[in-house]
Image 1 (cartoon, chains in turn purple, orange):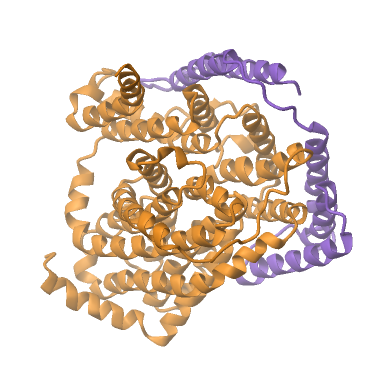
Image 2: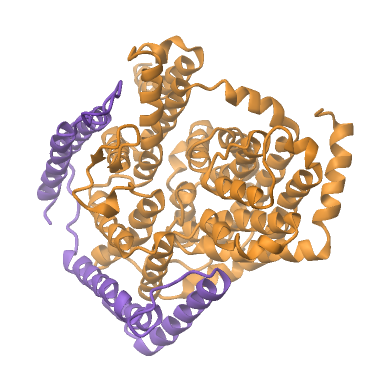
Amino acid sequence: MRPPLARALLVAAALTYLAAAFQIDTPEDQYAAVGPGVFPMIIGLGLVGCAGWVAATDRTTSPLDWRGVGGAAATYLAYLALLPMAGFLPATVPFVVLQARVLGSQRWRRDLVVAALLATTVHGLLTFVLGVQLPQGLLG
Amino acid sequence: MSSLSYLLPQLGAGFASALVPTNLLLGAVGVTVGTAIGVLPGLGPALTISLLLPITFGMDPVGAFILFGGIYYGAMYGGSTTSILVRMPGEASSVMTAVDGYVMTRRGRAGAALATAAIGSFVAGTFATVMLMLLAPPLVELSLGFGPADYAALMVLALTSVAGLSGANPARGLLAIFVGLALGTVGIDVQTGQARFSMGMPGLLGGLNVVLVTVGLFAVGEVFWHAATRLDAPTGVTRLDGPARLTPSEWRRSMPAWGRGTLIGFFTGVLPGAGATVASFLSYDVERRVSKTPEEFGEGAIEGVAGPEAANNASAGGSLVPLLALGVPGSGTTAVMLAAFQMYGLQPGPLLFSQESELVWGLIASLYVSNALLLLLNLPLIRLWVRLLEVPPALLYAAVLALATVGVYTLNSSLFDVGVVYALGLVAVVLRHQEIPLAPVVLGAVLGPLLEQYTRRALAIADGDPTVFLTRPLSAALLGLALALVVLPPLVRAIRTRI
């Protein structure tokens, strides 16, 4: 993303928040000395003012590798989708290996061992010591 | 009542019950489990203690509280470890530790940063325990005099103190605060029941949990940032260089910071609300202002680690004051501890000190014991923690994402929460790209809902008259101080350049 575009996005997001803040009404059956929309409106004005101020002060930032972020985010999304279906252990091990690869790791065998150790330890600590129910998966 | 001749025998009896071998073992288990969960982003002491409550039901209360105390302090310390080593605070109260702690790590001084955090936590925990003993009754009276307007003014003071963190351009710090405040307005308005900014998603009606905001912006955001910048960035992690202990000059610089952090932490902890987080932010700000070399802050100043770490630990002691003396919990963890008290049929409050003195003093002594155990266990472990840095960054970051997912999932067993954290991670990339600091965002999200409630309550009591904030001496003084923090530094700079 080019820096001017990012700054424009920042201002647009602030304006969207402010517009939404103006649409908050006090429910008819409620009384409030200060309504639920007042605070968001003040924050919205502050957001727009500061975002405009930041956008106006010219500073060039280096471009980001959005493809890298996209790869990491897509792997993470796949993990989220797999968790409820496969369960914690079967989803986490391949996720850690794949995510490490997306982030630049070349040694998948070592990553696999670390991922398996990590997932089993966390699973053991949470399930047997703390009694937390982790996603079980369809087979669980 | 608070004379030493009365206190010492009571404390002695407390130590006698805390130092029984079984209780020592429970303390060691608590400290170890606490440190381990502190390292997991998202999984904090409040959640762990509440998960352990059913298990401890059959135990002797003193033993159970020793276990809880160990978890409380251990989790705080574990949070600082990930802040310092990989710039990923597990909870809001270790956000400030990451600022200078991580720069120290990149310079090969991870050992010193971890040591100043561990020793500072011990010193702060010790003095906070002493202050808890001596000051509980008078402090309770003082904090009862705080009205809604005074609380609102205190929050404004805390927020303005971090606006200066953004360096040369105050617009970026202010924008960060407003982003945080905006995140805090998501969810149902507690006064009127009106849904705000929930975009029709039921998962957002309850608001954005501060843990989600911290883990999303820092842990997930850090991984995405690594993915976005790795083309031109170095590996990002440096191995240990030099001794894993403090040098004489680092001792000299750390000691006053521990002292100031302890005082700030304890007194902030007494006030209900966001004790440990506000304490660590205020302490960092104070350190920067009193320092002769404020330009070093953000570049690896050891005071920037020593102060906030002492402060967040001391606030744990402070937050026990209203719990024990009034039965009013001031933080998430003490709220769970209140539930634990009730599980044992005990009602904290003014009578607890006289009716259950053995338990109260046992608890105070056990806090001290778990604090000492924490130092004993962790100082030798620093070298082991630092070896974590030898894990290649790509693998480490992948593992952190998995840990953050589990930590966030366990909060509410909700995959929706995990999705929120992921979205916040992307927001963090955009903010960092624009050089907007992330720490004030967290503080804004923590304090926003409290500031709004106290402001509205104060206005409701005053029939909507906004001068209520200026007519109460305490709130007027706090607001004046906040204004001075904003106005004075540029004024002083302007005068200096003219001379």
